[in-house]
Figure 1 (tube, rainbow, N blue to C red):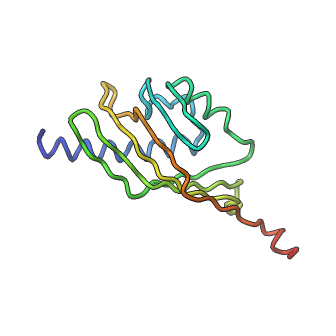
Figure 2: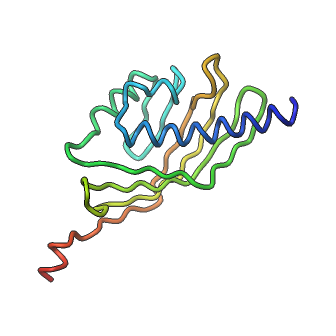
Figure 3: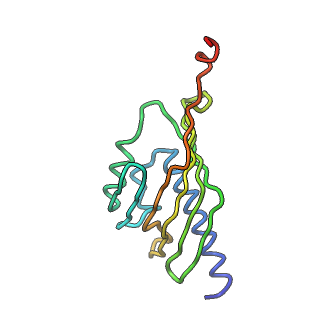
Length: 145
């Protein structure tokens, strides 16, 4: 594999993390197939999901009215092996309401596998571990204290 191809693959996989964050933040759950493989397996704090349909249904059901999110990935690592790659990242998630500071934040560690498909790189396996979570006091609570 040429070094140009390896660099392009690394960039495409790094973009995959960014596209996942945007999909989650914009609540475009029906577009999950643009980042996840049809046979995706996701293991996380709430259990295991198998297949694109199950992941999509979970994403739709976990949406909370009026709550927005901002997902940030950092420390993305990509270990290429042909048409497969071991991937990992640190993820910060901010939960907020329009125009307000976050009321909850969380730190996650994600690790898994990405595979090359005819449509481009897709996550085929993802392990999500909660590292920490923090509830922020709202301004009203602070004023009353």
